[in-house]
Length: 427
Image 1 (tube, rainbow, N blue to C red):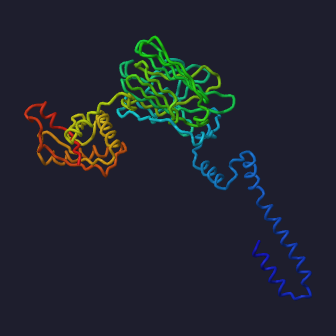
Image 2: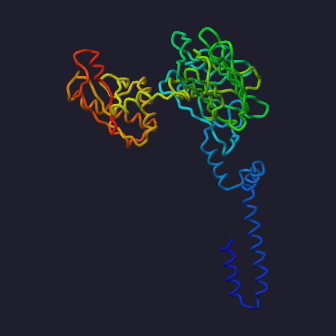
Image 3: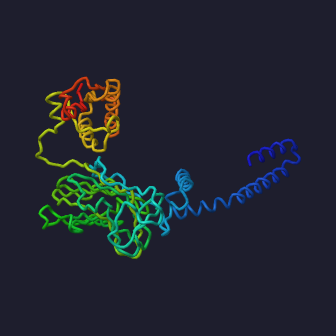
């Protein structure tokens, strides 16, 4: 457009003063026609954008429109709307609100299921059915367990030999759940904690906008009841995260990182199940279920005693443990080692300026040619695990000692077990 006008001006200048007035009129006419054609050529594309702006006034900036287009381009077909026709627009959470969260996930996994490798439409292979029906489906890009609509479906983990006493004294339970906000539909989940021979001793119920519960007290006769709003916490038409922590007697529940329930004295339970309510218009899905030993520390105001690690380091300058275990002849940590490593990580994060030499020690079975590099690799594996738990790698140095510094007689199995150890020497 600018080039056209410039050309016309040059032509006008060359024409001379006699025809100046006529050229001026022609110039105005040509510019007007060109502008009109430009508008007509772009009207179709602009109409769609204008309709989007009118329907969604909060998305009127170029940056927001660009992000919206990018999000749509990245989505897989079928990911943004389930077979139930649920839209995926998110409800924004409140900004600037203080989030009460002290959640720490357990480290030793007892049960875990992300539904990967499952066949669509089949009952999930890691679960047992208590009532009605559930199946494997996909919702917003995630493989998940879909609960049957119009019925009260209840499922529980399929534990070997039908064991109904698998919840430890200290554990966390987590899963993602989908919360629909489509008009005329409801989301309603029940998490039940049960004793070995009974069902539904304690119940946590939650929907799009609120949570209610009853939790049995240790004596088994009384219970704690309560409810609270989830209105500014939930992401509607999207996945949300549920987490529960139990430590001896303290039960805490979190939604999207915010602590909702904090009960200091609750009865220890043996197993759990998940249920959806009997409503015709349900759209209920869960995925990424994880049950693990360990988690949130027990709050005791009058507890003044030092931890074993704190006491050992304060008295001797080092912490020695035989509870960090490896696969035979390898530097691969066994899962049960993570509970001990978590304790060390807690100490290191509590004392961020303390530096340690992490020593790996073996027994005398095998040659030094094998044991020396193996002990080094094992020490490095422990350092890597601690780094993964948030410890500063700058404060740790891995050193392999092989079998050169025994603390017990290698002639006995008990002595060899004591020599297979990890030492944390404060520097």
